[in-house]
Amino acid sequence: CLVLLGVLGVFGWGVLEVGPYEVVTDRQWTHEREESLKRITALGYPMFVKPTRAGSSFGITKVDKFEELVPAIEEARLHDAKIIVEAGIVGREIECGVLDGHHGDMPRASYPGEIEVVDEDHGFYDFDAKYISKSSAVTRCPADLPKDMQERLRALAVKAFLALDGEGLSRADFFYTPDGRLVINEVNTMPGFTPISMYNPNPNTPNTPNTPNTPNTPNT
Image (cartoon, rainbow, N blue to C red; front, top):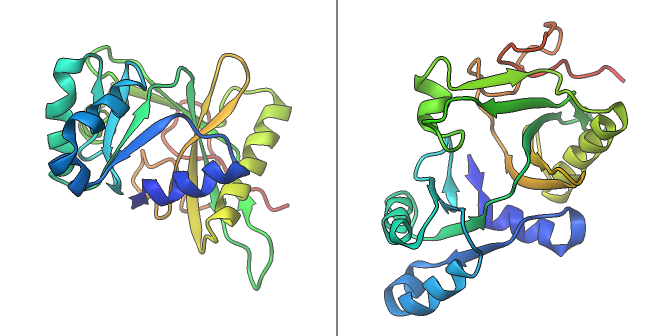
């Protein structure tokens, strides 16, 4: 389950780097549509239109031109009257599981995994790529990152968990940009436990590259 607006708002206070985005409420879309569209188009293309409260990529559309924008907004509004539009960010999609500590101990982060969409018919990791197609995406666990970047990403995943006052578990999703930045995309406060959910329900199960689960949660 995701509540994107609250998540990005907290991170926007300076806790972690977030990409440019705009929010459109139901009232704004009804009474201030032209102004809302002006704000959104200033983000540039491509952009991603999302419901603020959803999961599994329901209602998310990649928009490459203005003619696609309004239909994408209406699609997102089928899932939530309040929508968020995010500027497209060039980068690798890296995900990191976080497990809460016991009795007040600090949370622990998994080694990061990577998702790569390899099917040109999918512009991003959408519902079909996640759950329907068997060959649209490849996962790599652990992600092929320098060790210092892996450690930095794990620390940021824990930082995101703490910033949201998380409980139990979460999965933090980042973009690793060509210039070395880690831009947080979202935090899933209850990731699924399907083979492609990128959160391993059994931290004692070994993982190998190109298998669809997350790396072990370290014991230290």
